[in-house]
Length: 243
Image (cartoon, rainbow, N blue to C red; front, side, top):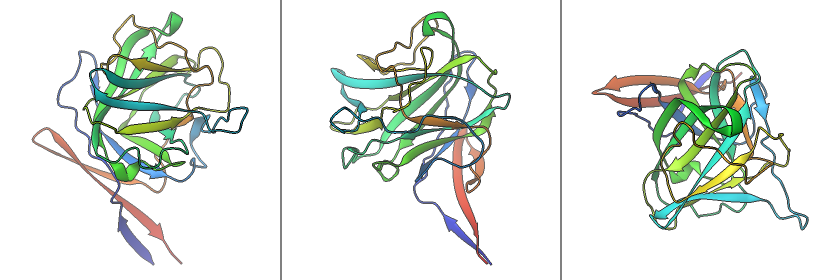
């Protein structure tokens, strides 16, 4: 027998204004307990610990113009298939630091020598709800249509809050798996704007953030997208089969 359950913790995304050359995208956000077992091509979603056994993390926040931080992460695409989603591991110390909904943006960008931006592949804007932010869970971004990436090409993503919300903090886990000189994380301060062509992603966090990418939709998520007046309304349904 089939049962139908509507996921309450899914976020709406619409991108009404685009930079030149950027493709409009929508995403569905979900909270996963573990990395999917299939169709994952990059997986460094493991938590790094200090010598004292404390989990390493970095916070994303936008309290005001003087107190804000965004993160970037580079990666080499290792598949001939398209990217369907990205998942980020939330650190164990998250607790109740993220108590209010907040608007965010996620940029996917092609990088060149010195981790500098050569082009913007896609930018998605969304509301991150507090119900999606839970310690040691995976925040998963599922694109409404896959991103066409080139095998062996260097890319990066930039996660950034776009709305100032005092005391709201998203704590992301640093990876326990070194990813090489061209796959590193970085913390940006002083701006929540997207990086533009010629700007570098930096390398403050050599091990990078704990994340994974997918080349097919996560099996348990079925997504319906409707467009009304330029806004994307997303309803996500989960179908579970029971014998």
